[in-house]
Image (cartoon, rainbow, N blue to C red; front, side):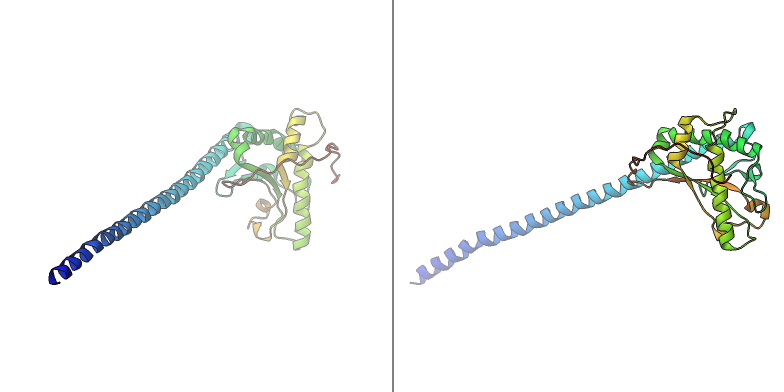
Length: 239
């Protein structure tokens, strides 16, 4: 009887060992699988972050190259006095296109300058980098700090409109834009308005014209060109 009990106890003990060994192996396998899944997940996250950083760096580099092209145009003799503010992506026409107090008119030399320079900007827009990143060009005609807010708002809007009127004029002078260039202006340019905080301490410097270049963000979709009936450019409503 004692021998039988001993044999039975040994058989029971030996029978349980494979179960505990299998459970240990299962836990080890699960741990390995968990580590593998975590490694793949971390790799995917790292790859996503790296790709986003690469795309952001590429965008920044391309924009810098586009601004280089605009800045190179400002170095040409006919455009002396025009400058590029790279921190705001702005083209400032400086003393070459100042408005008189309370006026939205531009004289003949100012209009000729704008019509001669804007095609240089359109070349940048037609560049592959420009087609990829340039979203629009905002025309901003500013007012000085004199006058009420609403008065300056209307005046600055008229000054911005005046720039478009000058660019889309139907004259046939040497600086006149081609029909293709006018189409580009219509598609790209947007009239901006007055900002109360945009006035400068110098009154003359405040009555200025700026072209602000706006760029797409990484991953931002390019809007489809609206199907709008072409009614021509018409006459300037400002007179």
